[in-house]
Image 1 (cartoon, rainbow, N blue to C red):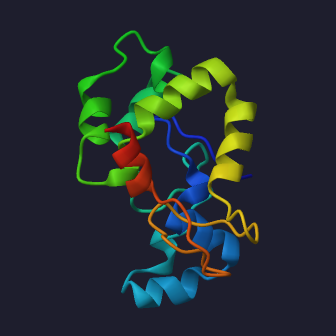
Image 2 (cartoon, rainbow, N blue to C red; image 1 turned 180 degrees about the horizontal axis):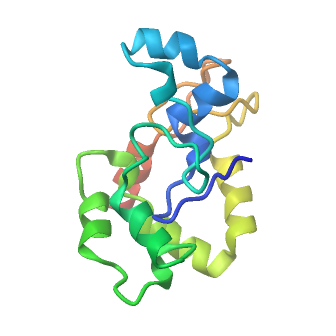
Length: 153
């Protein structure tokens, strides 16, 4: 079972590693990235099968230990770990507070529907990752997470 929502507010459906799994190209990608394929297998944050990049995430482990669905349900929200995550060097992290607010007010299902549309090419419908600037299928320009980060600032 795959889950595309996270505790912190990221959308797994636009994660390059998740997309590699969806496309069935884990082996090829692992070779290209000089990694073990088992380290790239992922079904989304809220499953038991996470990539090496998410397995030991402090935010995930904290939310699970508190039996929360989202960070905004915590009395300590927004905590230092979430704020440090939002403000780190990865532009796709900068949107988490915005996304958590949307999830809180829209509900998970509506937010997931909006995210699926947001991270799909408007020309051909192909799903693309946070850092893509062109659709991987038709090469049409797409809005990346860097564009989102700039919009927030």
